Length: 90
Image: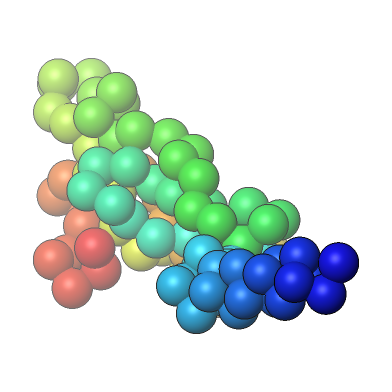
C-alpha cells in the first residue's frame, strides 16, 4: 500500500512539473492565428471564434486583434476588420 501511495505522489508531482496544470486566467483572451481563444474555468485555452469565417460586405476577411473589453475594463481579443487591426495588437 505504501508503494502505491508513493507512486501516486510521484505521478502527481511529475504532472505538476510537466506543465499540465492551468495555463491561463479564467476569461483571459488571446489570438492564436485567426482563432480568438478564451480561457475556460479549468484554466485552459478554448477556441471561441474563427475570424476566417467572418467577412465584411466587400468580401474582406476579419482578423483577431486586441480590443477594449467594456465588461472587464481591460483589453480583450475579438475579430475586427483587417484594416482596423494593428500588428502590435495581434
